[in-house]
Length: 148
Image (cartoon, rainbow, N blue to C red):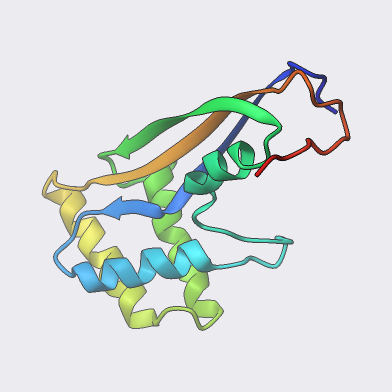
């Protein structure tokens, strides 16, 4: 429970904002979109756009005042343990679940590896954080009165 005027910070990656360099834009888009929309077995809910929705979720509740902050993570190395490498490798799981073709993933990995050897590899993803304060007139566990 958050007390009145208590502060919260909620952050989430915007999975659909992943950027990989490469020649076949359509292939990269297919893989990024499939990954962003993939609800893994352990997830109760999945929303690859949650990062961009944080503002609306908290602001529209009427319970918080706050702001959104963005951070772009950039990798220029394609190897473990870098985040972009790990996410690129996670695309393999899309094949196992029928969400992407093996050919797409194999060609994508070959291209990323080639870019690495040419010193041209690039990856980025945007993360968003909502930093807010519970409105003073809202008690923990209560829904705020909303006016039209």
